Length: 267
Length: 267
Image (cartoon, rainbow over all chains, first blue to last red; front, side):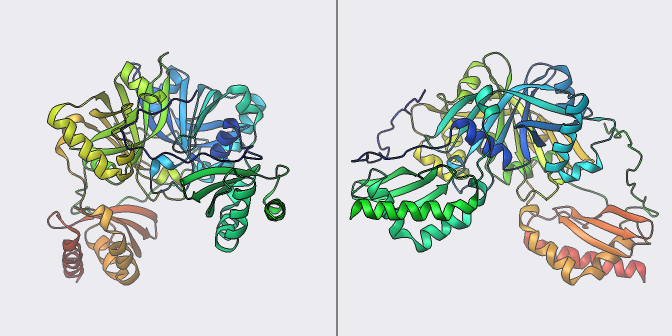
């Protein structure tokens, strides 16, 4: 469900595409959430205090099949909270928050925490240590316990106007994007040295034949997010690769192919 | 209350001082919390979902007398949550998180949110806009509302083993540290160019006459946090100025005075 914000009267509007967006495929909310979760090792936990009030606290985590693995002390308030009521959620903010914080990417994973046992406890310990090496100094203290957040509900916010929810099953089935965390240098290179190619892409495939400038804002496994400058204003659009990528090594060939086919279509 | 962590058998222990720590004064938990709150404009809100489960979500905030001023949409889950139940808390992480995340500084401010009215609503709007300039694009949308978190309980964690609570009154009466956010360059200069002076300080005033090295880790309005290397191991101690500082301009004179009096005491 998308709801419009109430209009204060001077909201900038985005010019609509005047041609079809040929391949608008993009990551699902579940994939976006898995990508954010895999990008860092710190989060904020919301747990319930003794009186049922919500308690926000900084935590570290590792991931076991996308489920956050926490290591918290029962001497800390959040540790006592989890013991008393397993309902919990974590908010994770993608690294490199932009100057306008609400333009950044963040997720909430909500569910219930459980103490892992048996082989899962071993795997959870390894997952936490892999993500938080300093945990080796306290993970075996008797007051620390591992908790796995069994994710039941996922909310992803990708910046202004980009948001969606995902179910537990969708989240569990998704995988982190292999391109997003590696693509910063390639995106800079595209913008610095291949602005003409990006412009051809949005004119041919992005729905904006009147574009006069195009800037790549992100590359992911399915395609490129582009900001378009056209005489009618500033828009954002999408240009997808012919096939999804599995590795950053494939990004160059995919963008070269897009450039060639865009120029052929415009010729 | 301080509780010891359960000992897994190989915990490093810190050598005790062998002389009095002459002036161990340091910021209170309330002052530390005010300093963290003033250092950034992003936090994580914990609110209560319809079913009473805790919901963690990224937010921006400004400060009105230290109370977080949020601007959230009622179309967002956290906006609906605050409308339905005013109990809330925010976790704020100090900027420049160290490589070991749990060595970093963070706080939780807990209480209840209220919609400000009258002159306070004007002041709250100004406070939010001052901290979050991009809010000018949406603060007047009809679905956005300002909320002030009336802080009733404060928890500060200053890293491993440094933590304390503060009451609402203590938090309200405290002020942010004027030195901490400005002192990075001065601390680097002390360590790079005045290691001998720091060593004299910890030998004379910091309780470690057997110190062989001292590194300044932080300067605040009351004094310096120092890491001490002595033949018995690594310790942390405190050297306070003769009087608290009001401005970063006073830091140089305060450390020069400490150096002179330390050398006189050791002579």
